[in-house]
Length: 624
Picture 1 (tube, rainbow, N blue to C red):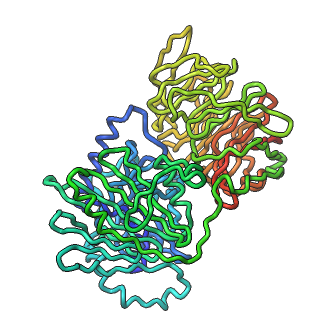
Picture 2 (cartoon, rainbow, N blue to C red):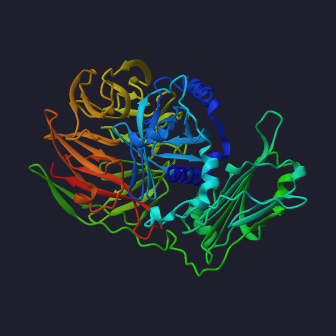
């Protein structure tokens, strides 16, 4: 049990999750509040993955705790709730971690996040060899959430017995073990002493923390400390964090906080502020939320401070005066920045699925397209023009014999559009949650409608389906400038994850209402079910693109990194991995566009081999 405890505590601390955790006695009330918030979200608006999950298994460096063993240990009650409003809860060791947020594929807190995959009702978190597997139970959590029975203070037992842990049981383990000793007090003041920083603070100012708010590890250290208010919340709170390793956590935070990487590294465009003996950048755009971040290359160490709440009484400034970061020059050298890195070089490959020979031809961009958005990118082709929507920015490219050549950016009214397709008349149709549905033609906006969210349009541009996740959708029709809407339910699906509309069919990916398995459906344009499609082992993941072909149907499974084929009767032909036909290395299938000759341009994000950045890449897929 100690090993199991260690794994989950490490996971929790990596996200800084325990800082805002509530006790298990508050869990049901919190879940019900979340459900109430979900009701306020626009009807039929449930993101992919929303639901209540229970732990199924856990694996660490080849050692597996299956459902039976977890049950014997009492740990089978650990749950995860992904709520429709974007909040999340995780239950670990009588603590409900309720300061979490999530988007499809990511769970995070306070700017940190970890990825997950979801396929066939199974949610998997793989954190550098620690694998947590959860199983979907229901859309909504139960009225009374499970709790550990006879908890026995696992965390206290873990701390008390840690020194007696027999390491010979895990001779092959390379995991860094945490330092669990409580911080020592210093006369006249408080002190938190970790391996990577030391903080002295004035207890008279009201600063306080719990033991679980301290993470003290060789590779990272973290502290949440706060001044409580009279209502049991906080008046002022600080998160102090430092980690060793590569530079990419710092570089990612640079962009997140609004600093241009090139301006920072090359032009020294931003002033530094000394915090804890380190020169750090400061983002104080908000009067109640200040960030400090810094990086020491020779030490290979990242420094982070976030203080929020009441910053006017001087106590936050006094807290920083007592902070000292500890770091040592180890001769570390950073990897390349994105402008220094080696651009992606593709290759042409082919593979067989059944009797079909699929071929992938790399379509290079004249200049690399750096992407800061992994998932929500889109492509549309109008004549000889290729349009790429990346991170809310719309760019036009011209097709040449050798590459896609950049033409220019096209202005959009908002910067968070993430869905785009081209109508038969060449109009680009863009939509996003809570933004107007707009049309762009010849570089200019030609219409805007308030209402439709995540709109999948028919190629004619005359009508489309707005969906969010549940099986209840809105069909929008456009005629003579007027917009009308009607509600339509697809009863075979419990929640819809993706819709593509072809000339003849409505193609839907979603969870089957009876089995719970992710399934692909083909409906006629009146909404009558014609075909239900699965693969050979029922393991469809996240289908980000579906289309009709001359010989049946094709789908891109971004979670599984697979291309799947079915015949015209919906019978499964086979599938191949991304590497088989594109030569790529675990990319994300963002979107695709069927061309007039039936071939498909597939848009992906791919990390460079040198890890300097992700790039937008494109391949022409033929042979199906």
